[in-house]
Amino acid sequence: MDIKTTEFADQILQRAVQAGAVFAQLGQAETDRIVDAVHKAAFNQRVRLARMAHEETGMGKWQDKVLKNVVASQLVYDDIKDLKTAGVVSEDFASGITEIAQPVGPILAVIPVTNPTSTVIFKVLISLKARNPIIVCPSGKAKRCCAETARICYEAALAAGAPEDCIQWLNDTSREQTQALMSHKGLALILATGGTGLVKTAYSSGTPTLGVGAGNVPVFIDVSADIPFAVSQVFISKLFDYGTICASEQAIVVEAAIAAAVRSEFERQGAYFLSSEEIVKLEAVAFDTVKGAMKPDVVGQPASLIAQKAGIAAPADVKILMAPLAGVGEKYPLSSEILAPILAFYVEPSFTDAVNRCIDLNFYGGIGHTVSLYANNEARITEFSLLMNAGRIVVNTPSSQGGVGGMYNRLSPSFTLGCGTGGKNITTDNVTARHLVNIQRVARRRDNQRLARFDAALYLDESLDSEALEQIFDRNY
Amino acid sequence: MKIIECDGKLVCTLDGHFDTLQSQKLEDELKAHLKAPQAVVFEMQGVTYVCSAFLRVCISVAKIVGAGQFTLRGVTPPIKRVVKMAGMTELFVCE
Image 1 (cartoon, chains in turn brown, green):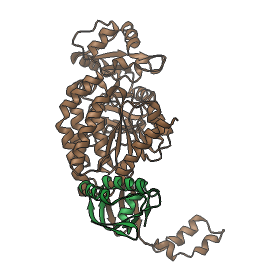
Image 2 (cartoon, one colour):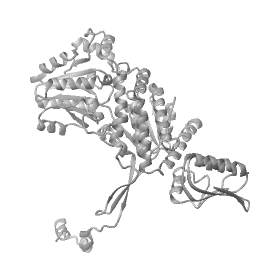
Image 3 (cartoon, rainbow over the protein chains, first blue to last red):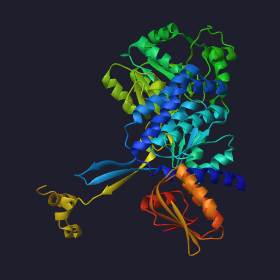
Image 4 (spheres, rainbow over the protein chains, first blue to last red):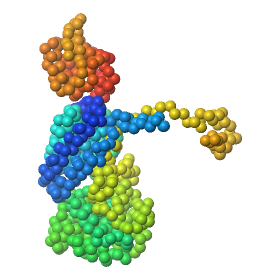
């Protein structure tokens, strides 16, 4: 690493470390005042920032980006405002344990191109709530809107009494500089929201990381589902920002018994089912078989534009392109995650086969992320859920919004969705402020009563097995 | 705040909440008195809060007077914690 890169990282982290030291002095009330001020400032700029994001990235719909900014500011704030994140946060006389929340320290927040301004707002709020300085590291394709978002948040934070440099943001950072920051000894944590490569780099840096995984969300529409309702919810989700949220649906799976009704409902609501030849055309435009990933050109684009690019004669007002497929895997590129209004469609002979198909999809590039289910049968919901490997199993809700949380369910609203160890993450949670504190426990003396009165010399008697010892240990307890 | 010269040392007795404004006042006062090389002592017993600007003043003083010549004395535990977390204990003596 050259000296310039090292100096660059040293400067950023020195400022962040000092900010963290100053921030740690603030109590809950002062911290909450700062968070309130920042959320309001961001909320008040939600439309301008959404338009900026859309203009700069060319992805999605600005109106939906406004909603994302609303979730990131209003709903996230509502979720975290009452959390105790500073000083003594719990006391229990019986156990003698007092919990104290300390900040983790400077956080590097990696921001994806798909949800730029909303992720900045979200990460700033949760970091400041836990009294951590944050360094915003935007995607190269969303630098300006992220910088502006960070600036708005920073000015509001300072005015409310936050320390200088509590928010920093990077411009034109090279890969080497980002890596230098990630592995810097002053950095406490990386919030890594982005592609697999980036998350892997973060984990390899040596700095604790809360990362995410890729999604490949199957939607199982059960025979007990309200089909028109289920299909309408899929449209709400898949069209939201033109499918840029990682928790958005990727494939519909139905049993043969209801396949015709489901297909008909999709067509009625604006989907177009592709022929085999059209599927080949779409694959060429939407998926890079060499890299094994979706092509960036289709991400967040409307179905009509994608169809045009692929030379598919879909109706001009088409909303979703549906690809009936017979399998999952490399031979079926459209069975992979594609963040656009494209859905694979599977018809299976039975419930068991349908669940197996969902498992195939879940495990094909989406382990630990999200699955979706429409059903009005609790036993089926439970049976299905037990077999999936997903941090979020959203029931009867649009998957994009359902995964993010706070709108259609009581999950914590978040733009960093953990995928657990299957996705090489440390949590399956929707990451929020409570993940950004170190909890210290003051443990007062509370003797283990049974141990205190037990004759420990008995442990040395090899003739006494666990049953015999435990009988004595538990006697009269 | 009170600044006096005592046995060739510049002794600053500081008190209270050091926000940006107070830190700026301190910096302005120091400019009038500080001359390198000279030992500088900040008496910190009465200081209850320090902001980033105060830390910058400390870094600046340490650079002017040189290593080992700048002491923060009577630092209370909350302030000591700030100095430690800010990674500044190598720049000056903290007692």
